Image (cartoon, rainbow over all chains, first blue to last red; front, side, top):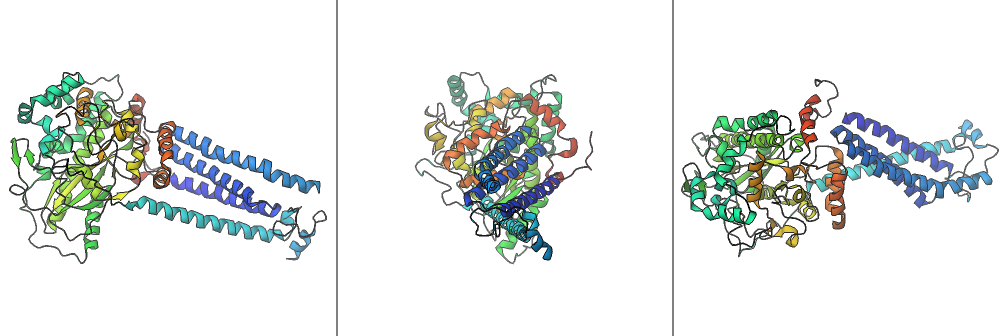
Length: 96
Length: 504
């Protein structure tokens, strides 16, 4: 089961890299914006990996906490970064 | 290429406005329809490569961290307090000897007076396993008692059960050297010898093996033959002059220990004792087969925890046990004394474990007998002598080995609870923050522990139960354990098995 987890994590990780690479050619962003997005993505993946291992070892509470704290924290960070640092740039683009 | 050029000339796109350009607005209108497609692949590759490098770097850093760093500050000894430990002053030895109980009635009297108990040391060890089971009480049923007794059976059959209470020279830990090969095997290098010893240990099912120099500070002196009630001397009675002590760690089952303090947990503890006997005798036979003297030992001959620390296998914890990275205190320790000294000796290492214990205290909270020093004790319970309740009463700390900087527990209260409970406890093992099964996220925490600032340790300790770990005295754990055989989930060799284990 752990091998399957690593496989799915690899797929998710690849999708994240592709998504960020796509974003990098859509819009020019400041370094701290990238830091926010990349940290958020890593946190989301970390939480999923944590939760997978926790569910496999039979401690569902740890899995739930991992998803809530790590993945949830990552999602919040990405949403805030997008809302306040990426979206204004995109809005500026559509207005120009 | 021409296609890319055509796509890049989308009407709404201002020229040169890709993110890779110097345009101030910094946007493109149709990213996949212009030359930036190449840029996209390039960046995906660079991003993936950077992530790969970052991952490899993190793996390397974690690996280095998990190897620990050599520690020069162990042991810290107060020469004014320190003296060799008399085997007769170990609680398990004392309670097994009628002569010693007769000689020191004041120990029992003082304990009962101070703790307000009516406890009989000698009757205790006899009564421990005679408490009736209750099939309506998870963890204390006939099945749990059966597991307990079955765990001890290899020692019983071998006639080595008293070894658990420090009796030396039992069949598993025999002092007989008549089977030492006459020809001595010559290793090409010390490293080759150490590797060979550890390879043999791995074959026999040892989870970790380290090699320490024989150190008289950790040997019981004098030794004591409990069955014949007589003192033994290293110089006159022991069959050779030991130079090396090989230390082996035997694992205990995670789900079984999690049931503590129920009898179920004692099943794996008892099995651990049996494995100490089996593996130590196998290792001793291996060394004797190489032509060198060897005697296996469990709890007898010397104090196991400092020897294990000297062999680089872990650090001393608040609960008085060895905390080994990856398994924490969920191991039993056996030793092999030998005169073979052409080996590469291991040295004490630190993983930040003892320092973490200074801020944690989960074992002390979980201990049903309050035998473990608490965070609020003097110096957090860490020092050269005990600071637990009544430790300033004259003679009360007779069982402690004074003068070594460590956490001092009151093993008398611990033993008292075992007897009342009807089996050994293990709550301090189950609740330990370092007692984790073999999954990557626990290794990750282990790897970052030495690098986390001390104020974070308390938060990490608090989050341990919040994440669902370390709860003790929970009947559901016993019920869970008895279902854990399904799929052999906790067998590390079958961890990735997704179909071939039977479902009941």
